[in-house]
Length: 228
Length: 101
Image 1 (cartoon, rainbow over the protein chains, first blue to last red):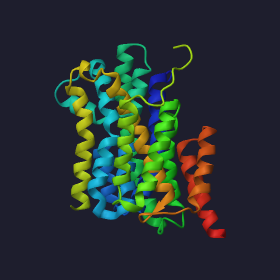
Image 2 (spheres, chains in turn yellow, blue):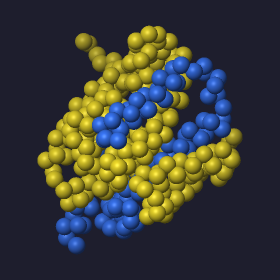
Image 3 (cartoon, chains in turn green, cyan):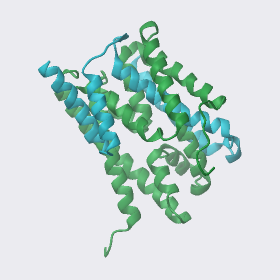
Image 4 (tube, each protein chain N blue to C red):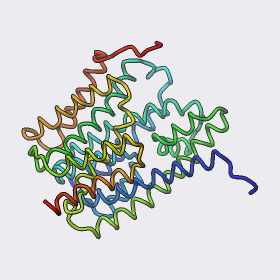
């Protein structure tokens, strides 16, 4: 090959970067009490970072009895993938089996790379390349993280509880650009923490989801940005 | 419900959004209120999970080494450090504080 296609380079770069936090998912999942196979099945079948971190976060807080709340948290965090799918559908024009594969690969990264391309062929190529790269790296790095996590032992000694919180903060950070999002985040944070002592594990997170419905439904804390 | 069954149901539930998006007509979700709620739902859940993971243990509010560790994580995020570096620094920060104090 005479030169590297920039789209291929971009897809691989995004895949590699995402894979690196697959390591932290694997390690945190085993620290939360899931075994290596359960951790790996989550990355293969759920394949959506936010939902996976949410699932193991609720299990870490409430143990196996909180599995119902863990399901709901993961499901609610997956809603944005549905919106990505709506955007990708007319671009990909997939039918039959490839549509089911495309759906599984419809995540933050593949949608972001695809929609940043100019031409339709590049958008399609960007989606499939990035989706495949992230799938391969995310899953192999989950395995590595799970093996490492199992070898570490007590998660608190290694600060893995802080790492789990940092992982959520890292996923949240780029979404806090607007005032409304910031206010919603602050309220949700407060509601979840304050209600934790009086509710079963996982429920405070779901109640925080109601904050989003109220803030979004009534368009609270909204400010017109300059130039609009 | 066993953990295995729970995680299979959760995986299916997450997949249901993805496939749903490929099935519905484009116009159905072309609603500013629905779009806004969907965006804010992600924000609210991630923020709630951050709060619970940072300030509670076993159903109690608890202030400990996680707070300075998360302050460090926030600084690194502000400096645009890579995800894995930020997470590792938070872990190392909390671990060191617990070791020395």
